[in-house]
Length: 427
Image (cartoon, rainbow, N blue to C red; front, side):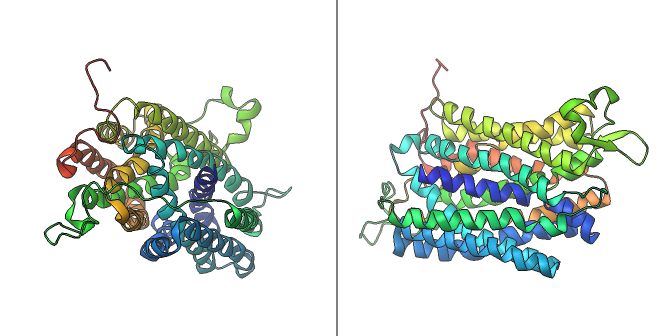
């Protein structure tokens, strides 16, 4: 239960980040590449704190690391109050970085903790189920972000610059209360199996986690996956407001009416707040993918499913790149579905069998999240030079590597089907 709350919190904060870019583009007149500094600051926090988080988790245990992370998230959330008064881009970026630094502790600790709470072959299933709570948070995050970042007064003037701090201050209050709950809650420290004998004392046994290709390639795969995810999530609003075909007037009724506004050419298009709402629909697809993926992982090998989903997302990005109208729009939402299992499954495959060093390995895999800081800037640069659809060429190549890692994992790990049953002729 407690781990689920942590994953929900992580998803909520990330969901708000993903609708923040367009706000700063409008308020500060930034290009797509410049607004990607939001993602850079967010993932820089992960990069800077991943190793310290792993080090502290080893010494403080899971419980101490979680409490430390929660308090750091609270500090970052409260910082948004003075940041709003300063109204400077750097101040908001600092708040984003502080929150991400705290979330790093939660990611570094909660992910490996979830994988070891049961039989090793179902580790990928457990972490996908736990991260389904992450998906719920991601659905709620864009709604909150759209409500406060794109709010308008009675005259139609934007008030987002004055209300941006509200959801972050709310998060700060919640995490401080959670820290108190975790302080008094029983959270046992559990050690995972040492399948590769990293804890043996024999001098001829390799002790470094870097001597295991399945871990090294997991770091690379996670770097590129998060790069693709961050790019698609952060530029979702830009895509929906610039690349979607004109909206038929017949759809401008009832609840749907709030999603649209007249464009410069007089035709209906999706508004910024409407696109933020649709981002939540994308995360519904993401959540459905998590739940169904967790079920599939009980029947099929985790590495094979990861490879298949990677190939499917290569296809989705190619269709978006090809600008096929509403088919491309549908593929953006489908890409959310096929991304769903990637992060937790790469994580489970990467730390498989690393014994007590799973915490250290977890820190490096979390550090690989830095891909989300770098590649969105490239995606934004391509979009600035061409258009948002063409920018999807960047995540296409990232997903290709994820597919490669999934299909080649048995060779990297020298294990066949350990994480999730090996598929048989009956499936």
